[in-house]
Image 1 (cartoon, helix red, strand yellow):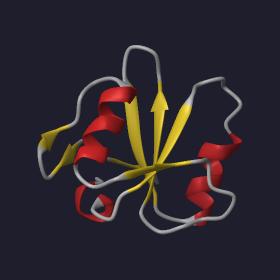
Image 2 (image 1 turned 60 degrees about the vertical axis):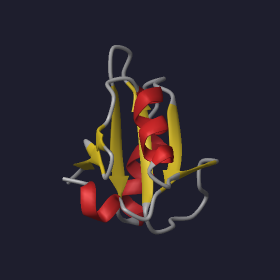
Image 3 (image 1 turned 45 degrees about the vertical axis):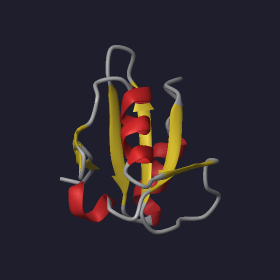
Length: 88
């Protein structure tokens, strides 16, 4: 089951994928290349056009779901040590 990030310790994330990434980075997150192996505290931000979605990839299987998507949406990957607190 997917868990999404809507808040950081600094408040509500923005609407776009870029705003969501910026908010997570401002709260200590670090952008990385798409991982080849699962790592803890992994966030995938998906650009859905009018809005973005920041999802917590809490397991290797969850990460693979985002990696296998062939729908053409762009994705950015981050590592954020607070994701477990804010993912719902």
